Image (cartoon, rainbow over all chains, first blue to last red; front, side, top):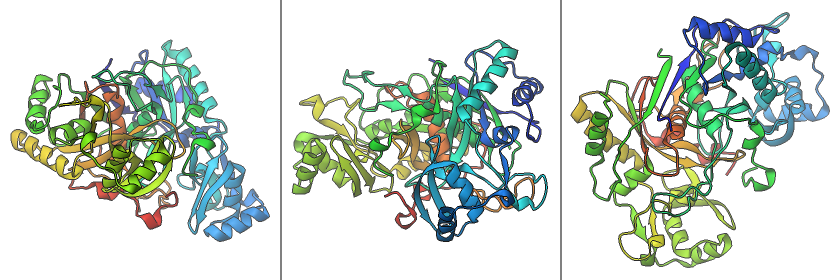
Length: 257
Length: 257
């Protein structure tokens, strides 16, 4: 098993605009960074550039909030049009209080504001503060498309991870987490591996995609979009078909909803 | 800012026994792995070898459970002596059900069984299944001791992280998390950094120590103790004095207790 892993942030990724071909942009960025893809390599991509390329920008002036959104906006001190978008992107509201709205996104991850963000959105018209960015329509599908594009160009078997930064229960600070995946095992099952003295291991499954997301997030930084793509060499598990849904804890097994 | 980070698992770490001098063992392991420490390097260490070196082994046959432990053992289908130890190591019980006991450890991290583990404990006498391993008495202090020992030998300013693997709310699978730290910023504060278009960044603080813990955990593996130490070069933030307590979300700010 590989015992060394190197993460390298790609330099010179341009500002991404709706309609951009991310596969092509990443392919040329790899070349200009002097990186030749090898089997088992992984690209970790910040969701913001995927969302922008997919045109997931919405202008709040076009949103009419429902009565439910108006009420929740009052309780959270948020813009009712913003809350309306959060509700449309969510399958459940888990917690709220002034300034905070925690939901289960329709794809199953729990996060603040359904991952919708104001920052770094370049307004196309009107008040720039009115533009917000939704998560990719289907992050797994986005990862699969980018993987296919790079696989076609490079001929190698690579993995693609789309990540966001989420807060956690019990701990302060955000960490990078997987929201979409193609080719990278989301969970690695260690059940039944004996430990050194022949007992059964109690720990069951490792969230390898989330651990890699955290690792890549560390060198992306967050204050800008200058490093939204990280190349990973030395991921210690074999690549395979995968999906974010592996990481979703079923509601009935979740003691903290 | 550095844009490349390499994590290397040290080879040939011996089985650790109570009383072992971890600073010395790590120093020789670095040498035998051909690694010369540089300013800014970090060693990430699995808690198990720290706990063992500190002699945190307990034989359950020496534990007399309280009435509370007996009751909780009945409700969780666990050994009452084991539950007694969990309670002694904890400041609060958060959730329980058959097979599961989630507590807040007295140092403030939330995890199953207060981090007490059966696996990989080499019995000194009696039934090997009766031996369990508690977390280090004071993980920050353990990290500081190891850091001081390696700093004295190497003359460089390094960081030390002690990590464990925890389950999460909402998501399946374990991830590596920081439980003790010396010299590595636990939280990195990005408040007020402007984004590319001059707005204030909404995301506030990054749990850099947890992101690094996850990264290192990925290449440690979990089924054995063969790779309990990971050397990190390229951590993108300046080292500074730190403590696990930075990561602890105050109870009144925690919506998921």
